[in-house]
Image (tube, rainbow, N blue to C red; front, side, top):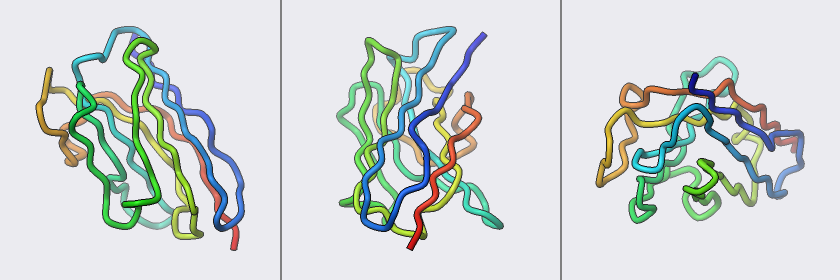
Length: 127
């Protein structure tokens, strides 16, 4: 049974850093794009960042570029999201997800392309 378990969320102040982790189990995702999405209260879930299987293709939504960094440890079947200079508008539930396409060269930002999802971890940034 595939499981994605996010961790690292919490309550921080504006400008603080936070590092999210997502550990996958049940199968290896070494050849699949992994991504982070988030959903703020009253809003639709949105793409945040993605990294393809090789790590050579990464992408970010404009609002987090220069502040967030996505990375992965293939041996640990884990994806990370380093979030720096956090802002109140970053407050959301953060979800990790795994692409359904094997060996995608360029990461995808489309939510519909992701097959497996974690339960989410809450990130709250106070002003």
